[in-house]
Image (cartoon, rainbow, N blue to C red; front, side, top):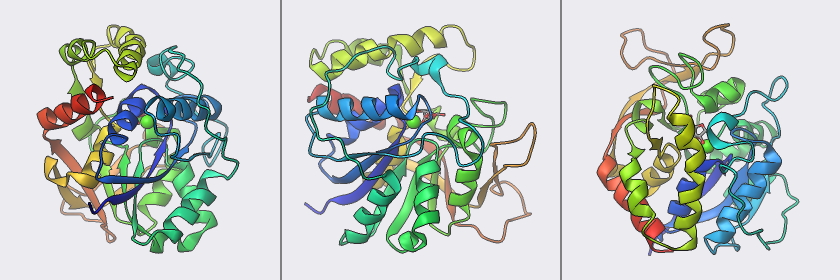
Length: 312
Ligand code: RIB
Ligand code: CA
């Protein structure tokens, strides 16, 4: 089988866990490595969560690397503990991974992996973009080895952290801007499409019947965010935000996107973290190397997620 070489950069919270458990069951993927940044929770929590999720999935051979503990500029921005819990996984304690702790830093490990890969690598960024931006800054020729960046982040319209900013971009807008200006093709899975791919409470009820350790862990993990969602009006279900950039690497036919330009606002007082696109205007940016996704086959994505979780 001709596998697709990818690298995953995450900030393991609950939806990152769904994405990782799904990705680790997709045979067409060759996951060269996983890196972790601060975001949903602290870097240390995210690193521990990622190691333990990958270990629970039975994939301790996949190496996991620590990266940034704060955004590029300024002190650590807000986390998303109101949704993911202080520890990042809704308070669920997973069995401790026995894998060796990697000492190499995320940006160096990513650079080595893509440089040594026989084919160009797709980077799936499902967290603030700090690690990816740092890798580009420290190793500028890395752009020659990356096919494209599939990112979960931003929103052509709206926001989930401010009225116009999505969490991953809001957490580190400078990093996002560096990615958009890097010249690497970017496939942006913003809230415009990810909010349409909900894993409903009925889907969770079905998952509860699977009975394997992964399904049991996810069943407990979702309780914290669902309790939070009961207190807000903008969202009722958990959304599979982070699954989308990974699935696109092997099933692009499930998604509908438009070529455009996207840049991140870093200077605005009320607009900081907004992703600005020229998709719906005649006033186009000069450099347009993004594809912004607006629609996806929710049913098929949920089916793939369920099948992955069921088969552990
Ligand atoms: O806005 C959703 C994104 O922010 C997801 O990646 C979630 O894990 C959080 O990091
Ligand atoms: Ca994430």
